[in-house]
Structure formats: C-alpha cells, structure tokens
Picture 1 (spheres, helix red, strand yellow):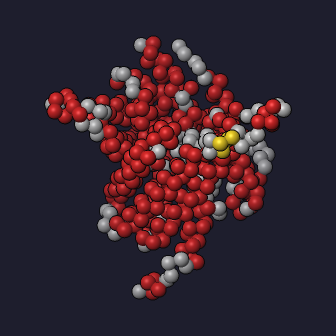
Picture 2: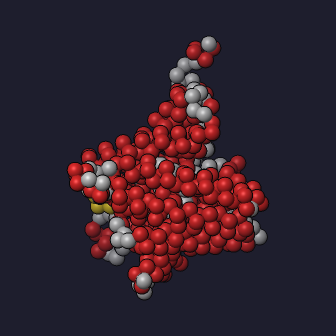
Picture 3: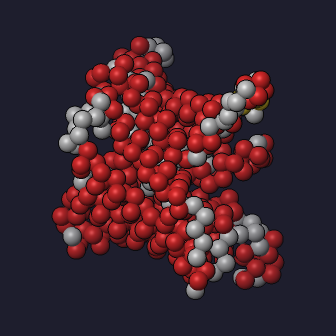
Length: 215
Length: 205
C-alpha cells in the first residue's frame, strides 16, 4: 500500500509528463507518429486542433487501456487497443464535424488517421499495459503534448513564411510587400514540412548532444 | 481503361503516399536502413493495400454510405452508418495483415525475421488506412478504379522506401554534421525527394 501515499504530482510522475516534451520527444527522438502530423501543418489553426485531438485521444486511450490491463488477454490486445482508439477518434471526429466544420474539412482524412498514429499504439504497448492508471494518463498527456508542440511549431513557421499570416490574421505589414517582400511558396508545399522537422532535430540535437545517433 | 491507367500513374507519382501526404512515415523511417528489408516491406504494403482498398470499397458502397443499405430493403434507405467507417476499415485491415503475416512466415522465414515487429505494425501503418479513407473521400465510381488506386499507392510507397534506403546505404560513408546524423538527414533528404517528385505534378495520360 506504499504507492497509495505517493502524491499525485510526485517528481516521478511529473517526469512522465515533462520528459516527452523535450528529451524523449515522440517525433524528434522516438520517431513515432509522424504520419498524420505533417500534412496538416500548413496553417496554425488545424495544427492546434490536431494537437488537441491527439492529447484527448492519447490521454484517454492510455487511461482506459491501463484500467483494463489485467483483463485484456495478451493475444488479442492489438485489436482491443485499436477498438479503444477508434472509438475515441470517432468521438473526436463527430465533435469536430459538429462544432468546427471548416477545420474538420481541412483535416479531412487525417482525423481518422489518428487511429493509426504509431505513437498512440506505441505508448499503449510500452507503458499503459504495465502501469497504473494515473501514471499512464500522465504519460499519455506528456507524449501527446510533445507531439503537439512540434506540430504547433511547424504550423506556425509554415503559416508565417508561407502565407504571411498567423491564425488567419495578416502579421506581415503591407509595407514590406510593397518594398518587394514575397511569401515563400515553398513553405506551403508538403516537402517543406519534412525539412523543417529535420532542422528542428538538428537544433535539438546540437543543444543536447547525448541524442546524437551513431550511423 | 485509359482512366484506370491514369489513376494508377497519378497515385504513384503525383499523389505519392509519402511525399505528398506523409503517410506511413513511421515504418518508412525505421525500416529504410537497408535496401533488402525495405523491398520486403514495400511488397507487403503493395499487397495489403491492393487487397484492402477494394474490400473497403465494397463495404463503403454497400454498407456505410448514406442510403447504401437500400439494397437490403427500401425501409433502410435513409440509414447512414458513416460513423462506423473507422472501426470497420481498421478491422478489415487488421485481419488482412494477419493473413499476410501467416503467408510470409510460411514461405519466407528470413524475410519474416527481418521485418520483425514491422509486419504486424502494417496494421497501424497510416498508408493502409489512409488509402481506404482517401478512396472513401474521393468517391471512385467502380471497384476497378478503387483497386488501381490501391495498387498505385502501394507501388508509390514501395518506390519511396526503396529509394530512401538506397540513399541511406550510401550516406553512411559521407560526412554529415554530427547532430544531423541518422534521423535529421533522412528527413531532409525525404523533403528533397518530395520536391523532386513534385516535378510530376499535373501529369495526365
């Protein structure tokens, strides 16, 4: 019963929440969940909506799986996990369609693709199946936040340089355009998202040298 | 026929799963260290996409779409089961992947050992579910169009992963800045390959 005394926000638990945001970031370090991440980062708004959806799905799927961890037979656990995730994603999809129809149209199939976001499955397998509900919830939220942080950074940069706006509002003054500034059309195209993430990885690893790979 | 070839070519080059939509990036980055394993995984993806897209096409058109149930009885004509789409598609995909896994294990144990965890993970490969969801969104008219879209996307994914694997084999011997090694440079190369593939944009047969 010693675990009962552990405070809810003990240092160990906070580490679960904080570590994935930088040192163990799902995208730049664990290389998971890139699939649905990059195509929707042309603008800031869909990136934020996507990040929030993933936080919701990931926190709850980790929590539910962790609550069920002693009753799920290990043979069919993948299917059970997929059903849990898929049900949560359906909720997100229906809510988005009802309240944020424009963003939902922009995200198109990528809301559905949260189901196959490897980071969610990965955390369920690696963490939620063998840990108590509360740490699992924190782990899920932390990883989703780390994932969302990259999404928002990429979305911000692409919208700023690609269209000269942030959240749909123009931030680059008209005067600059008059003296010859132009939006960089390359930032709107998909390949640029990959290059931006590559540069983020470069910056992160040169600040934190223990993350550098061998080959 | 011309239409089918058009869809096929378009899904390989213009709407490439990796370069245009970033689908299936997880296994793309993790398995692309050697050409041999990536060829194996590429074929598995072509196969699974080629099967699941037509099957999901049938499910979409005879169960899920608005009014699709009318063929059972006219009373069901106003039923829309669209919200079940995700669960049904993923169930079909998971069972197909199980099938492929059994076939590969039986006929090519070395490939099975090489692919390791990534074979079952095809089930959660975004490219597969993405293929089915795009098919549903774009409303292809016949099952033949849907299959040629599925096969084409598979081939596109195959080309992309084999290409990057070949480049990564060579890049081991070049002088990459320390913090960019491994993942970073792979991202940037993928971006550059994506820009190259954009040259195919607008191709129409």
